[in-house]
Amino acid sequence: MRLSKKIAIAAVSTVAAVGVATAAFAYWTSTGGGSGTAGAAGSTSPLVITGNPAPGIYPGGSVAVSGNVHNPNPSSSHVDVVSAVVSTNNSCPAADFHFANVTVNKQIAAGGDQGFTGSLTMDDTAVNQDACRTATITLTYSSTSL
Image (cartoon, rainbow, N blue to C red; front, side, top):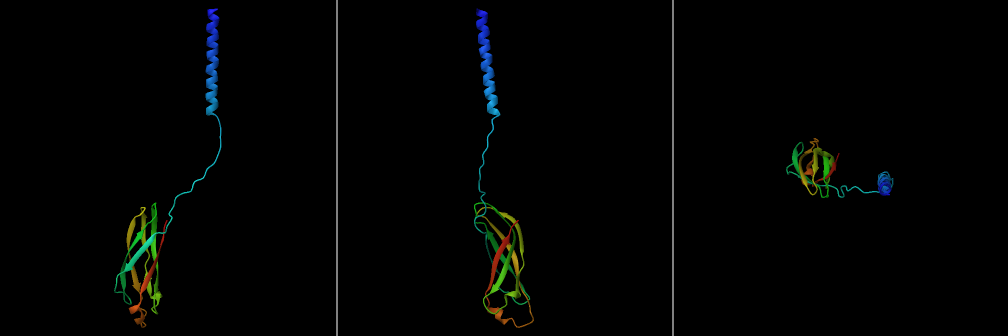
């Protein structure tokens, strides 16, 4: 009788072990499904570009333009090229002025700044350009990024 009791205990133990192994196997091979979405945080505000030409431009001459690109965003932004459209406030033709594109090609940290130096030129058109002596020359900047 003692031997049958030991065999019975061993059999119950074996069945229990197989049951646990089966439960574990079933757990690891279970399947499921689902979906989710998330929005990426990107630049939320445009870069702020400022810059002023040095005084003293004249027909056929050029002056340096010292500028700055500020990134007001909470993440970094890349700026590749800074360009500008020139306008004037009187009868001085804006088409006589040219701002050469400036390659910056920099990653600007969140809240950071990147300086640049450009050039503003004035054409010598061989006609009277006296209206440009008192003109206010405005540069409206833009940038491109990679």
